[in-house]
Image (tube, rainbow, N blue to C red; front, side, top):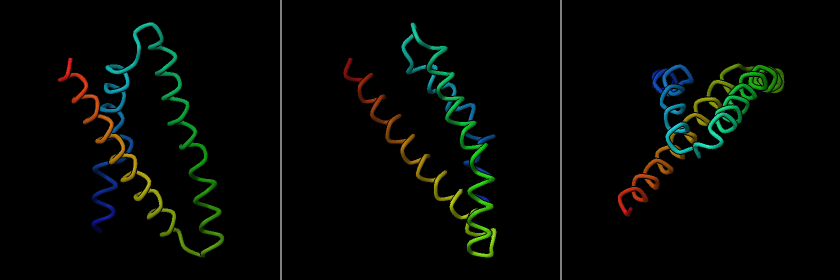
Length: 96
């Protein structure tokens, strides 16, 4: 139940607007469209690959739970990396 709540709070629909704003703020103005295109490509690659990988995991282990837990772990890792990068950028801006 806890994993489901964390997944809901950190899922794509909750996190995507924040990440788009973060990418827009930190991307070079001369290549903003390229940066946002790369961000969208990476995000959609996950959306395309996730069902196949989850299906393979379900076929291998016999349970869909492992795929759900893997998604939760990957989102948590991504959130931690995002927080660390955002913190580093704030420190750089304060130094200016």
